[in-house]
Image (cartoon, rainbow, N blue to C red; front, top):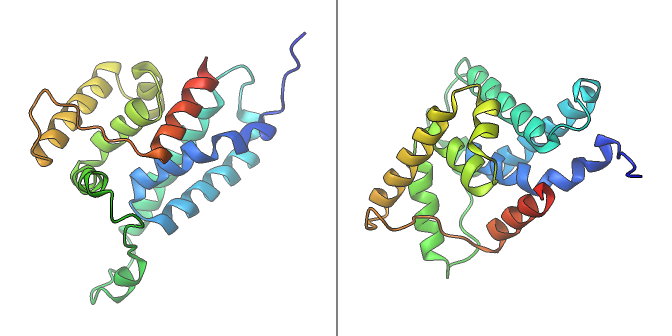
Length: 186
């Protein structure tokens, strides 16, 4: 007989994937950490709304996505950092000088529209099915497929790749997130 685990006990299993998704949305390490913390806090407080037997990771990603867009809406009402002093203090230089291809990929990825980045993170990096990603984003499956396809083509263009060449570049962090996603969904 399989014992059903309390979903609260499984939250830690999804931190890596949540962090990767948060980084793709915020493009800032500190903001990503804050977003993950906010996501876990909201999930914990609303655990009674989670339906056991459903996909906990998808539920967490939906919470995180909604939290991100709520933060963005609030930020529009805030005063801008006109002189750039605050923004300059938030930037972080790459830790690995030898990963030029990954840095090129990240720069190109950041230039994609939010919807395309989100689709590529959910479907490509996080391993969700198109249907799951569509449910999380509240759009049709065809919309997610289109966003992911346009995102891949734009990445290839920005990186100067052949249109048929896969623009996805993996590093050890990305590989671990993908392998964790794949092993849990099996």
